[in-house]
Image (tube, rainbow, N blue to C red):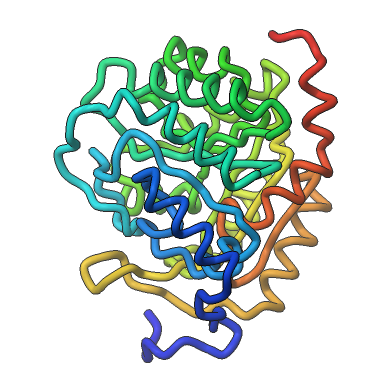
Length: 295
């Protein structure tokens, strides 16, 4: 565990400011949207919102799981908001996004884990924004393939599902989620010809040999995109920060993952799952991939 809570200089993010940031905030507030940028206390909110890029969180802002690394509120969610898919689609149109990331809280209280709302949101977004590529970051639907397929049948452009940490730390950090089940999500999406993506944190208690094993597993699952960032504890009640990871180590893990076979890697102290996602969308020619027949 770190001896001081003082962040090193390389973890200091710019404060949110500027007209573009304010315009994005106004849009989010006007449409009563939940964003993971706010709920998860993302350090890149100022940068991303200034580029008029935001990660929208659907299915409410209360999660049925209580992962020890996550700042999102856990508890008993409210009833579903049936107007949410249309509002999300309209907000994306007003922000004029070329690429959007949509995530959600886990909704284990719902029979389908929220899959029907996911599908409705993806379809509404595509209908209202036909030139916008769509990246989704869902929970694992507790391994129920029929629910994952409901989401995939709506044809998002990227399926993102975060492994978060090494295999040994899955139970203490992610609680209900499982290492094998998360890989199942990624592999099933890949079997249906989707671009796949995952993200992990460093500095939460992992060992270097465990990180190496995790990256090899990610490459073996043919995951296309990987993000690696520093774990930042949301509060004293959450899992403590084990260490500050130097930027040089992030560069080393990026080289390792690329050598193992991962096609694209974003790795750095402030990197989060949706960091520069719009640039990744361009690299993988997502609009052209839409012309492929569905599997």
